[in-house]
Image 1 (cartoon, rainbow, N blue to C red):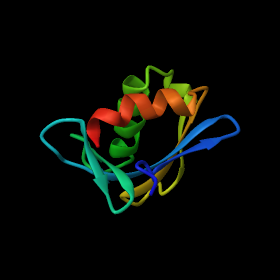
Image 2: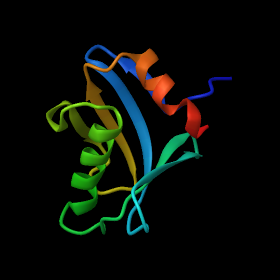
Image 3: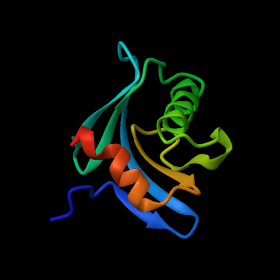
Image 4: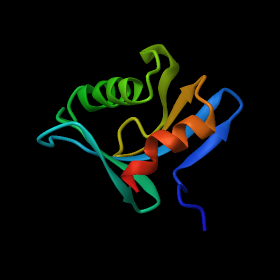
Length: 100
């Protein structure tokens, strides 16, 4: 069984399936939730604030420019697919290993 079913390689980098919990006490990755990576965000799900916070948080986490991070599916949902360009799959797996 795949230890990280929420992470897959794409031609440009990686695709990350995330489950977002808005209005949390802090921004953090907390592990897996329903075959997705669970991310808690302080921002509320109003006027795209949580989406912007999600992009910023994942860009910081993977040491990528915000312009390389894009929500490609689920803009109005807690379940999102995020594309992160120019990140090798092995690097992403290593960064996420301590959360699983």
